[in-house]
Figure (tube, rainbow, N blue to C red):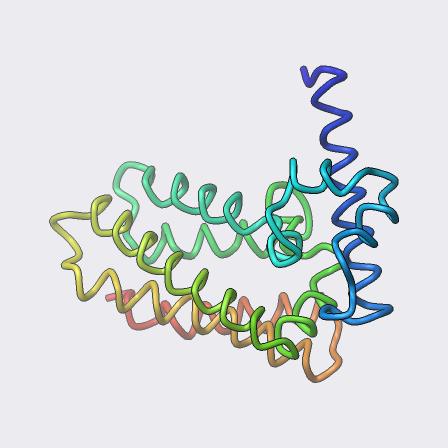
Length: 199
């Protein structure tokens, strides 16, 4: 049961995220100040820094949660489950419109993508997170299947899968298609990437 204090913290964090994204959309990322975000969320700038270290961190608010959840999933395959099956189950869960995968498909997904693609500092941060997450996932996958995958195979399949899914989503949304169409594109991309692992 989440206590009152924790619920209040969650509401404040959510208010900061909503305010920042709204201002980024209205004014532009570079033009929006931390003070404006705090004021829009009706908190002090000092309170902002209790939740986020920078404007950048607000935009990537769920990145670490997502990678930690992915690592935990990869570290615990079902008995007898093949690597391709584990990875497919992970992608299916992530692409779900409900449950634990839903935060990936929030109403902010298109806005966040647009901001990341248009701002060089955000592009750099996104690339860093992408490379870091792939390295961590490949390591955990290799540890889950020490007799089945060598380091190169683990790295190759994770890189192919994550790259395929992310690029499919980005290109679909960049073309102005819907979030549901982006989900479908990601599922198709995952199937193509995993096909080579199923043997």
